[in-house]
Image 1 (cartoon, rainbow, N blue to C red):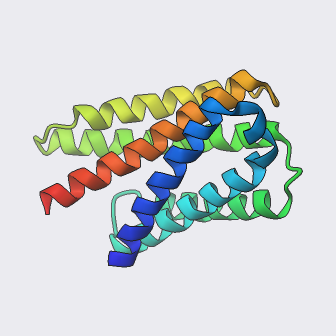
Image 2 (cartoon, rainbow, N blue to C red):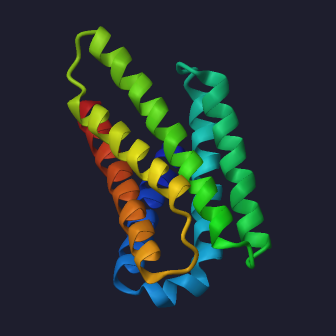
Image 3 (spheres, helix red, strand yellow):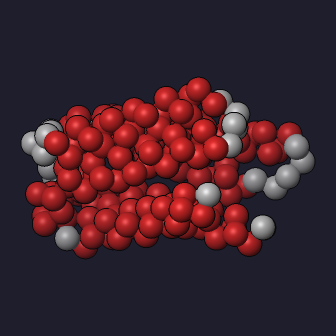
Amino acid sequence: MKSLQAGEWTLGIVTTLLGLAGLVFPDAILGFLSFAVGAVLLICGAMLALKTLAHQTSLFRLRLALGIVLAAAGLIFIIKRDTPIRLFATLLGLWALASGALKLNDAIGLRQAGEKCTGLFLQSFINLGFGLYFLANPVSGTALWVRLLGLYLAYLGGSFLFSLAIENRNR
């Protein structure tokens, strides 16, 4: 379990750094994007699947399927580096929507249990918003699109790190 948590910290840091690089150096990132995104998707998918198997959480099948699909998509992006950005935008949009829906489900469950979950509601709506944007606007290869992708990846990595810090504090 410690190695899983170390992997989550690493994923959060790498995703945040990749996002910041996309914000600062969009043209340079565009050539490296397929491999970098493939690595992030592969790690995210594997971590989600392993975490789901370790903790039989709500929506078990959906979380496990999402993890497997993310890992498979990551492998495709690593192996086929010429994968069009438009396909990536669609996959990222679907992932962000699914992630937002899962977070919204968790937030509703926590709210019904009487716990505070405003941050989780906010995260779910941010994910849903980015998901809708990437699905509706899969603009291929522009610096603005890469900056928005960088912004989302920086947010995603930061939210991983924030969630891990909160988990560690509550233990």
